[in-house]
Image (cartoon, rainbow, N blue to C red):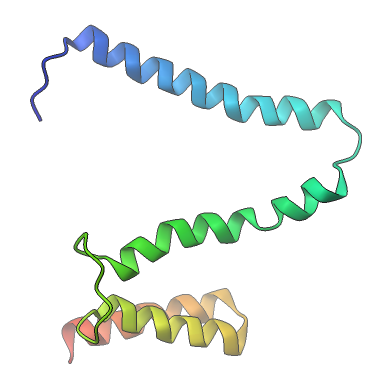
Length: 112
């Protein structure tokens, strides 16, 4: 991709973004290292972070694989995701959920 910025500016932006990202993450390590106990409200809020991050990564790929919302039976990722969600609800095991989702996606893409 062509740009009108010179390489020094681009590398400067990359370095600044890296330093800021490191500083943000380091601030939490520093903050939690200085306090003796995490407040209960913060601890209960942090329990939802993995699920929120996972949903933010998975839902766009499942619901809009081509960049537009696809809620039809022609969306093989949606069907495989629904089957994986059922497996997760029924078994409550991560490995089974991943296996069901991947096998369903493979079958829908290459067999059906």
